View 1 (tube, rainbow, N blue to C red):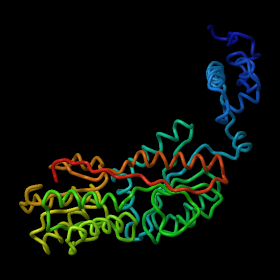
View 2 (view 1 turned 90 degrees about the vertical axis):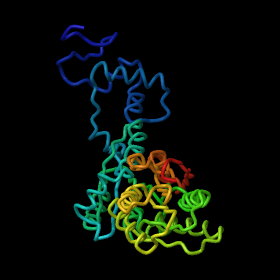
View 3 (view 1 turned 45 degrees about the vertical axis):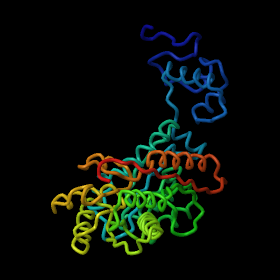
Length: 358
């Protein structure tokens, strides 16, 4: 097709290089009504797939660009959602928090899983780290309608953000069971069951002097994993299970492992509440000349990339983070489309992944 020729199989009244093509010209080229073109552009699910493809081809052929500003005035949609990563602990704020956000495999997996679903629906993802100093600014941003909904990663029981965001006129889905009853959907894993699987595996291997490194105990994950581990061992007659609380970082795992081994040098089984801390604990065991798994069997939690970077490879409890994040995104889109939809919870099941460390 030569420059200046009229595009399409029929005259659309638009010549390349003249004024931008219009919605009516797309409709004429596609052989459908203007209203049908509008429904395709706005992502209406009721449009037949063949008609949608015809309209999309017409849009591509003449280079039509929707007026997103005008569209947003009509639909009141921004076609974007926020992934808010909340940290209410002042001690964890600042550069250290940002470093954790961008280096912890868990947050990367959450982002990838959510993005996979949102991209297919033409929705942009805005990532917002929200440490204690920035939380009110984030609430203000969300209140101003910059996004259509919020995927909220929040773990600490004292975090005010879940309550504050759920009080805004904006859909929200939370990444874990909230500490307090709030009108919001959430997605979680059966944390206690995962810890129980770790306990049963270590016990079956013959470990009897067991201990655990927990996450922060003011989080559901930290508390429930400790509780599930200890309760399961209690059924086998092991009532005394030492633990050290840590912070889900590799450095925290190293410090906790040193503390545990100083007080319990004969331990032969260790459950660590995430893979990053487990990688730190393995390093300490190696430094102290303890063979894994011959002297100490080690089980982590997450089945993240950190588990495969360990030597020996880490036996761990898998939580399907990408699938969980995808479900969060689907729930959020459903709430955006149906604002009166009732909140619901979705609980995933953990599985044991056996490798070399236990």
